[in-house]
Length: 131
Ligand SMILES: [Zn+2]
Image 1 (spheres, rainbow, N blue to C red):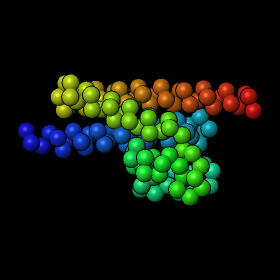
Image 2 (image 1 turned 60 degrees about the horizontal axis):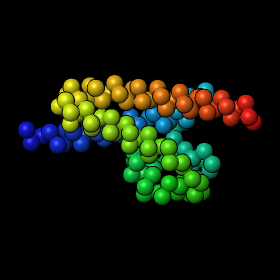
Image 3 (image 1 turned 45 degrees about the vertical axis):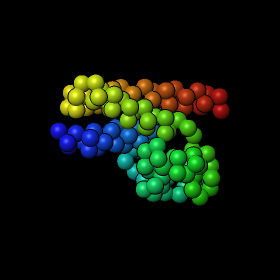
Image 4 (image 1 turned 30 degrees about the vertical axis):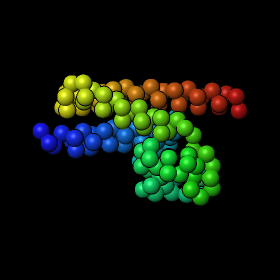
């Protein structure tokens, strides 16, 4: 089974990508914005994010946690959300094998997405009341 490491890497990357999508949803849904358009951009300066910015976890590390043009801090929660989503894919795969693990991983990541989006919605509601 020499194909397994590549398959696992691919599935974990898929998990990280889903984590990225969770960040996007948690950022936009509580504000009532579309998760499809516009393209991801910096909230401070409006610069559209490119491939490097959008790399899960790695993009954050490469940019030192800041926007490449205006240097505004991105916030540590986004790489953490992505890393957790990646781990939710990897751990069940190592535990149960590739396909049952991947199925369990998708379920865990979906739950994680609900938790993160729910917390973001509550934080958003709280800051609206305060402001
Ligand atoms: Zn910026």
